[in-house]
Length: 143
Length: 147
Image (cartoon, rainbow over all chains, first blue to last red):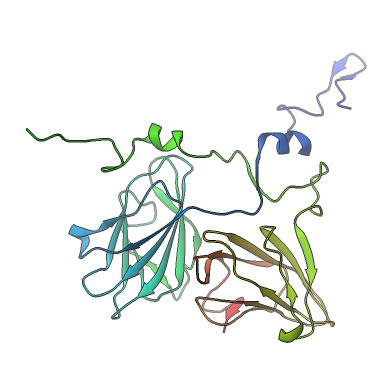
């Protein structure tokens, strides 16, 4: 039972002023069980001028690269939008180059091996890297 | 005279159109919880099996599996999911110096994933044929090691 008064003082122990209870949080949430993302399979385009546009209406893009098929682009999303890009197959030693229209960390992301992924989130102005194999011996290289 | 569509599926949606067809996850909670906020009703907790042949199967009906490795073993297995399915595996407890070994039925990046320290996680997504790593501590000085 929420406590709303303490003597002559008002004390809110449950509400926006002091945070929601777990029941209230759950009532406002989408419960995802299990989580399943929307997906697309695409082949990259031939060079930055012919990059294949990644869908901004599916969460996951699984990309294949091969000779003359190396580049993809990513238009701006909506604030809070999540985008996952998986370099699914890599043919002919052709790297994947991802060029977001606006990118918080640089200009492009490059993957030089298949079965790697990166997750981006649109902050309203730029795509930000929020997860993925971005390491010191970088697998997805930001440039 | 050519017609130019500046907003349609052919040339991309406006932000309003994108929002209209999206689910806003506010907040997104993977797997339900009880009212106390404690995991237990749906987030599963499993203890690893003794070896690969006796691995504990991770549920495909929950997004998150909390895994314990102990003297009894640290092997867990993961069957194929559905296209786009996400599986988050957290190595919550390591006892008796037993590593956690995750063996997906089909794994794009190798054969298995090993964690040698507790409080680590890896997130996989099923691409229709294989589980792909989409997030987690998979680094050059590997914490979760793909083999």
